[in-house]
Image 1 (tube, rainbow, N blue to C red):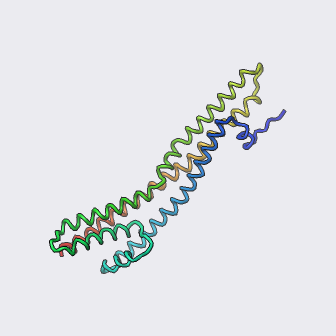
Image 2: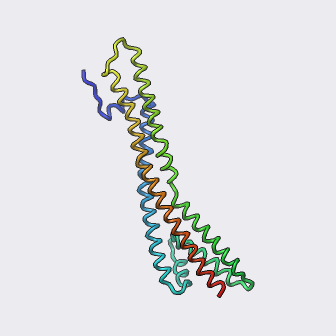
Image 3: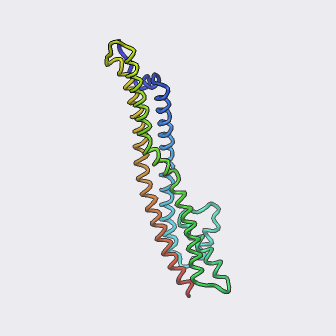
Amino acid sequence: MSTDLSFLHLILNASLLVQLVILALLLASLVSWTMIFNKRVVLNRAAREADKFEDLFWSSEDLSPLYNRINAKREGGTGMEKMFEAGFKEFARLRTQSNKDPDAMLESAQRAMRIAMNKEVDYLETSLSFLATVGSTSPYVGLFGTVWGIMNSFRALGNVQQATIAMVAPGIAEALIATAMGLFAAIPAVIAYNRYSNDVERLINRYDIFLDEFLSILHRHAHS
């Protein structure tokens, strides 16, 4: 008598707990892949916008028209644009005051740019924690389903007088599917988390460098 060991048959005939584990891992994998593709689009767009703005910034002789152009945009800017807009706006506001203090102007502009930068970094890091959680916990969740399935298989052997490989093979196979699903969910999440964390860190470094360079320009204007 042959035993159907097809993937779908094993899942449909697995115990309820193993099925729930497999379903949870499948959902986690689907959500992870959705976040992976979305995050790739977001990071690519952020890098392109940074390149575009840096070229525009360093090619502008006067920063006021650049600020007016960015401020007039209906859609919100990204990354360096927001930092530049926040810093220049605060610097220009304080510069109109009669009792202006150059150091206070620079400090206030730096604070405004730092706030804008932190908001952008928080946006870029969205969903990375979920990928890290899936990558670190999915193998253990799958292992739990495997242990439970194998435990049920051996417990069923206690009810028979003569055990054969054919009797335990389906139960062990369905249990091992949970481990495979855990790895299937974890491996892409770990790879994506490591790659995207590095991309975010590189963008943060670019933002920090731009912040320092822009502050140097404002310093010259403040003391001129």
